[in-house]
Length: 420
Ligand code: ASP
Image (tube, rainbow, N blue to C red; front, side, top):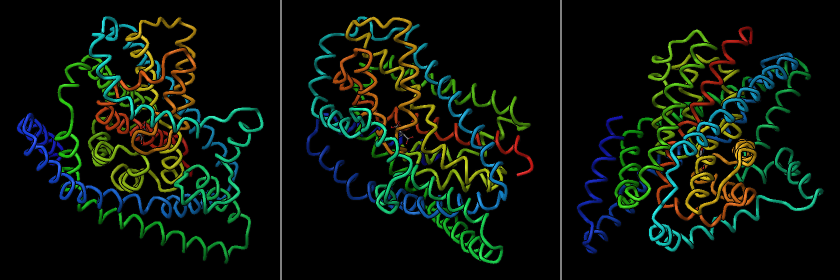
């Protein structure tokens, strides 16, 4: 926490100090590239490197350990319902805030043109990625959904870090293990448990680096951040951060209070390493090893529950993303003077919830899908350029909300599925 605050403050001071001085700016840039960047990256990569083996081993052994597959169906059903309900609530929060305050009305047209121009090439680059995510024609859509869940080639899916196929394969393996001879199953379970434990130990090594890496990652962001943009988009950014805070400090504690017997303040305090990691990395996948480790050790969530709910959540449950997407669609519509009817707003909520499921847990992954949502309701997708300059800070925030949504869900399942 100290490193996070210090990194942010020193970064902002550096940003202000070098403003208008090209030589100093150049020096700051090379300092970030040669020192801050590698330190941050070592931490990030040490976490990323364990994601695949950790999800595979912990999920397969978790499912095999359940013994009875009907239990899996029940846990799965509850988990998905929780994901869906919380994402819908978050999207509604985002839309309501923007509809009530309407910060896009009367947005300075000169600022709009300036932002559209400065970020046009980035917007085009993101738009080019939307082609990869939308298939046209019924057969293509069906095949795309099949590919998303059961690819033909698991190793190819894994090398592309596609989490859902990895989850499906691990579930299948776990299910198969419950059906084979006891001595073989036990040998395999031992092997899988050793893998899980070793991966968690590597996360422990990475966490030793965390304070330095968090400092460097945050310093790199704030030192380069366009503070002038923050003035132009101040109310919009504030509203989204306010929305995140509402979900994190009111909605989640409320759920913890009514669905589990836990003390929300203590829970949040114990979960702080997860939040700091998510904030620094802007990646649910990258945070996953920390999420699993801290949930099992500091939050007392049973490994069988954590290893099932958390990887699924890191891929499918994105409450912060749903909130952000809904708010952006409304903001850009307001900036362009487009009125969205109530029916269109309901459609936006549905599209945000669905697209948040498809968003990968990596930085900025929601942007191409967000452009598709915008196009569906008649908001110009290239208008996304207006907010691109502040997206990094919003991404850091939404990743915290995304990951904490998974942790709250795991705490809930841990409570209701007592016998597992
Ligand atoms: N960065 C987010 C995450 O990993 C995804 C996004 O909304 O871009 O959870």
